[in-house]
Image (cartoon, rainbow, N blue to C red; front, side):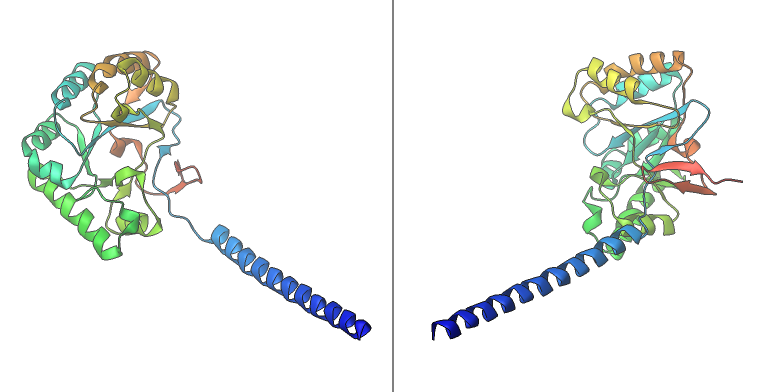
Length: 256
């Protein structure tokens, strides 16, 4: 009886190991297939920066909350002869149409920053289209100019968002230099983050209501202009056609 029991235990143990081995192989096969599919799947990317031989860069300001420091920013832009890009949320646009007009008349470019400042990777295609079409229309109603640029709130995106924006004629734009001005850094800290971070083709992220942003701009502009950099709006920095975007989000002109 002991021999029979022993053999039975060995048999059951063997079955258990076999079942475990089959389960492991199944999981590995499934995970492996998923990994291969994930790698091979095409990824749609926004434009984070642009490959440029000339020393052109763009500074941008997201407008979502308040206007307390916007006039000071506009004054510094005018003093330095810098044109830039403002990305506006619809509720900001509708609350401050006089600022939308003032920014536009000063020669700056305006793009949409969505309708509701939501995490748009969580939205359906219909919701995305509503966000973009409604917010662009609100800007166009004030300026009379077509909106061609879009910045996702929170820098949050997925393939559906980028592809839908593209289908609607919008270029999705991120940044490669973050001022972190929304953290209320000192003017010097903001300036040094930007000055040390830029390279030809960089896109700089700031906010229209940053506490010390306007104060940082004179040092940013004077230092970078003295180094030979030219500030242009995002729409004049990016390529509009015949381009590729690498895995880091850097836009390149397609080879001739």
